[in-house]
Length: 54
Image (spheres, rainbow, N blue to C red):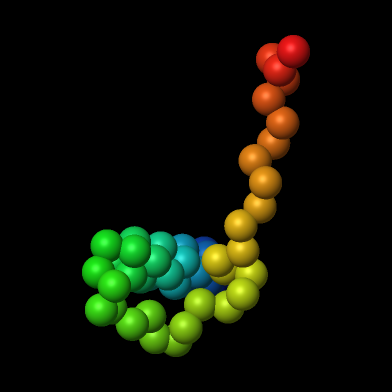
């Protein structure tokens, strides 16, 4: 496996762990995420405008 491909797989695993941590913390308030989420990881954004609004 090429080193670039290995790095991409490693990043995918890291982000997958963050997703599962988020879901577990949502479902189990006693669960503490370590390390804590960065602000940008939990920032909420407005959804896009609906095209069919009249």
